[in-house]
Image (cartoon, rainbow, N blue to C red):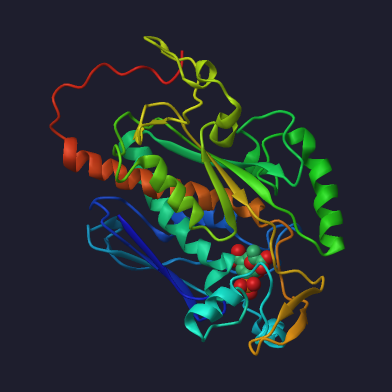
Length: 356
Ligand code: EPS
């Protein structure tokens, strides 16, 4: 599978081309609505107040509501960009943003909003991921879901998947919603921002997807997550906690009834084990702040930068559907590669249940 997105946050539209899809997947513009709504800005006071309709136009690769196997192209028009908000800093570099590196590399950049590095770009990843999630569920019974498991130094006191989409923080502990609202309200009033950690899980993944060295499933999941803007860290299973674990604790014992733990996060040797695939993704605090900071302009002169416009006090709150999309796209790619390489493999060894 190859996904390419295009478009800038303040250009006329954003879009993507997803190539390599099998024919026969039923898809309609309505299928995209739920996940795009979960990612969208302006649906709560805790996010950027930019309000986009995010109506998907299917431009190619679907005939009579079913994919044809040719490239699927999707388009969403930008209807609420406020470019005037960025006129004052068009020739300045926002610390923590991509302005400086884009200028160093290209010498000419679109300074409006986040341009190509805006969180707006993730809209098309979510749209492409809808197709992959649908195919994984229908073809393999695989379910991909994500939630926020840390905001600043706040972590859940309890965990449950059920209510994560019923609150604006995609948070797994309903008892903490009041605490989070107070924290985010106070943060927004202060003008600062905060980071977040997302947990993204896939259940029902059969063993065997991935590759031993080149094309390791965990390596490609990590690359896909790191490609999301504002991501500064990715871990699989125990991740960095593995540093402090002894081998006798980290290794996941296997019994005919199932694996007794999942520190591996569902992947061993670059190949899925049949356990839940568990990914942790670290999002940095949003860098566009109205609080002043030292910087330089395009002539190298010292300046102070204050960013106006509409921004997220915590961009991680809207990241779960983006992480789900990236995990689903990588898993679908490996499912197709596995089928192409090992479809007629001899009768495989009996599968170990994911857990007792
Ligand atoms: C966003 C689009 C952005 C911001 C925000 C979220 O619009 P612009 O490109 O005009 O800045 O509203 O991006 C940020 C994370 C931020 O805090 O600046 C989106 O569509 O997700």
